[in-house]
Image (cartoon, rainbow, N blue to C red; front, side):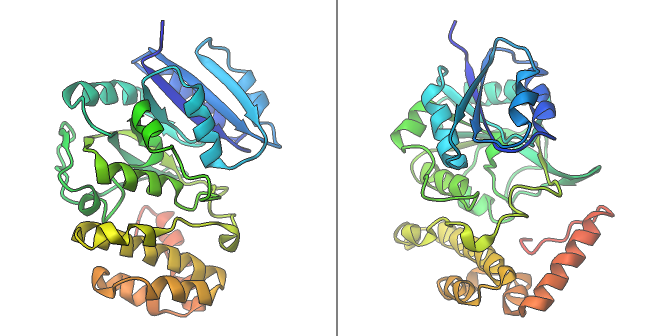
Amino acid sequence: MKPFFSIIIPLYNKEKHIKNTLQSVLDQSFSNFEVIIVNDGSTDNSLNQVNAVIDERIKVYSIENSGVSAARNYGIKKAQAEYIAFLDADDLWECHHLKNLDELLRAFPDCGLYATAYNRKLQDKIFKVKYHLIPHDTTWMGIVSDYFKSSIYNPIAWTSAVMVPKKILETLNGFDENITLGAGEDTDLWIRIALKYRIAFHSKVTAIHNLHADNRLSNTNTNKRAFIDLNKYETFASSNSSLKKYLDINKFSIGLQYKLSGNKERAQTMFESLDTRSLNKKQLFLMRLNRPLLHLFVKIQNGLRTININLTPFH
């Protein structure tokens, strides 16, 4: 029997986390799925951790290290189901995640993307994710009237909490493999989907984004990453004010990463490409800080997170 969901997990050097991630999938109350693990050239013990878990629904493929976009696209090609759910190898699902996605699909069958609410976790601290213009009622589900406006604070679509029909992924050619090292390949795909299709959202939290010390981005050299080209969407933004603000806020975020890495030229180029009217006072303040002060504010932010205070420039 063909599975209802195909769950794609790209795997690269996550030996400390993949077993817990995989267990959160196997604990799902909705059991009609296959798990496609794409081992993207891991050099640690990740693959052995996966092979220690015995379940006929798990399929493991190994490829040469090609990046997360290529790994996900490879998984999409291997998927047997009509609906694709994504999960990163260090994130977790609550046991009702797939069940809620199934409910969302049945209620709104013609959407391009289905998303559930998620929280962020650092060690034992849980940080609730705030969305703009989305009801706080955890039983709410519906069509997001303006994806870009609702994603101003935090993205409505986060990779480990979304499901996309396979036919949509095939139509849009999946993830852009020219974007490397987690530099916005998911954001790029969600933009392309949101420009053409409706987005459905379930406000019940069913996924956890783990912010580990060995997080996939924190140890990545910013200057080696090929970021999403946000400028290619400016034509659409000329008639879509919500998209324009969304693009500018993402440019602000990338610009800060370049400034923190010491690449003043790329940071300045990114900042000059945005309209400062899209930014709030906190964002404007941070954009104008020099690198040492910006590092200080990041250090303070990380320190506050350890006592369950999450300061963010996005709201």
